Length: 585
Ligand code: NOJ
Image (cartoon, rainbow, N blue to C red; front, side, top):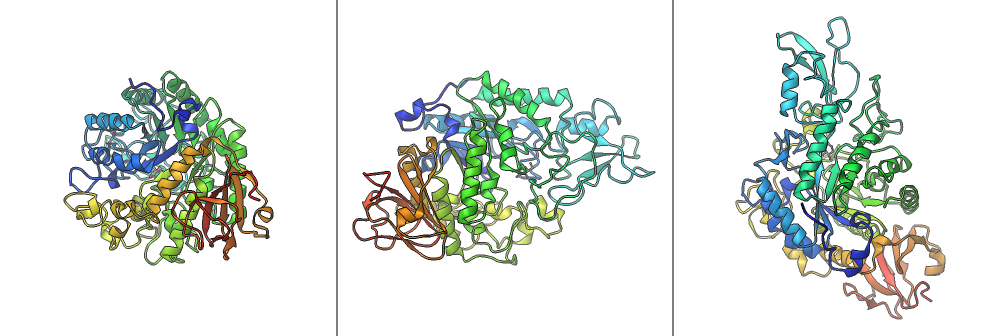
């Protein structure tokens, strides 16, 4: 069993309480990260081969989206065997090698756990299909009789998150039309019945399997689901609410109190291991205050702060979300997390420039309304990242955002893979646009993703311009900005700090309603979300900026602004420090 790691690079970090309180965690979507086998789908050996780049970036941990045995109907979130690696991604030995190589660099690894549902190819579901209605073989999933005299109407009116009905009728062993099973996602993803002790025990076994191999924790899929209202009432979602959950009035399958007992059980199980193993919940919950219930001291350790991801690019809205997050999470002794992108949402280098709303998971395509100007949206995304990485707590990055990758719009219809696209007959584009294999080298086949040039979703024209090799030695690149911010975040121990809001008028000598100013561990962060540039305080020293600062020496750490007041442009963020901190004057 693996024991505790050396914390990365700084001896101070060794003294820090638990690593996950302050960690920057980089999400790897294995299908699209790096393909060592050349079949066009990324794999575990591909990740191992690219670890140096992540070490250089300066992240603390990796979260790997599912690589377990799966028919890949939902890109691996449909698991048929939770304790083995799908041959598409390699072998358990490849996983052990990756884990050892990451740990040797002081990088932790958390893996994805999918407990709400399995694949329909899971042996338990296959057994349930041939088992008799009401038998123990069916009791591990949610089977119900249909409504109506013939039982040919689904048991409830619930809709699948991917579109279409959430129930599918089976044919019984004798050939007659039979019961219905629940699948909140695709037909191929039947929901487990968490009232079943078999299910509970099986997931304890799965947790131990990966903990014994040495993983540092789990990202828990659909952590707001799993337990359903036992009365199974009909329910109609609010059409304005997010499609991945998070409605103001929770659905009878989200946010049920029974889920908390499961996490208490898992918390106790993880506590039997050394090294501060952690659970991070993917819980789309209606309010920040309720989200904090997932991270009470005896439950999960972290939960994604999707409220932050969903906050518009607006100064007062962001300030409110930051305050509400810090208050809610600290009230239960948990760190806040921060996240802007993942494999389910439109990449923030596009999303923050959209003028029309794009509900979670719905995606966008070439004919979507309100598409942004690409360079302006990137400017905003860089600013958003610079603000996020200044905040105390733990931050999540999604592969490729450090390259400034936009959402890919031009995916041919016949190359689309997301079940959302198929289940809505193309009405919703789905999530393929944020899952396109990432570029490593501008001039290599598939831009370095695979030596054969194959790529499971085609890379678009111009993808090479974002390649890592071209950005590495360009001080103004998005990659260089991420590296600089992550290094400074570590040096100044911003993850352990706190937010103190500063009076913008005092600082800048003028009112600026769309400017946010905060101090964390002596670093002053100014975010200009307004349309006009603002003059920076003359005595300050620029640590980092999300963009070129007119009349400041940009790109060099600790380049003094000196007497010439630099300007902070619109949609830009700067990190400042002064020897006389906290006051600049
Ligand atoms: C959330 C995952 O992030 C998403 O990709 C997946 O489709 C659903 N859960 C279902 O597992």
